[in-house]
Image 1 (cartoon, rainbow, N blue to C red):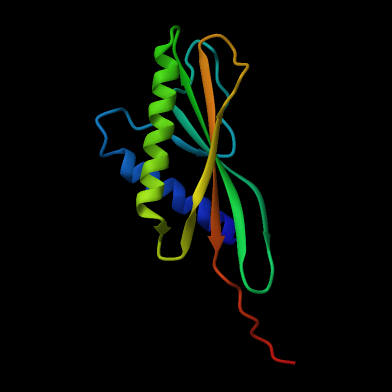
Image 2 (cartoon, one colour):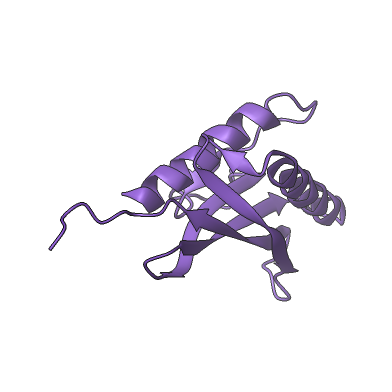
Length: 140
């Protein structure tokens, strides 16, 4: 449930913050792209995917991958992709705490897909989040 609350918090945050931009607000989707045809691609788009996590009795953390996609018949798709990825990275690092409980680590990685279908540009930003500590309620 905590992971679900985190990705929903990221989704709400990005939808709100990106609405302030002069650019069109891309849909921020959870998991996967909806069924689509190449005639009308969803572009630009951001997808949130929990990747992996770990923890112990003191703390937990999870990696959330933000996957980005743009569509363009020329290199403007690459520029749109890089600008969107950078805008999101800056927004998250400026805020750092979402809903007073989810904290993003200052470290991050990003990459572009080396192979991509014609006119589709894809990239990925990996973030690490601290999860709220779960306290033992039953004393033995």
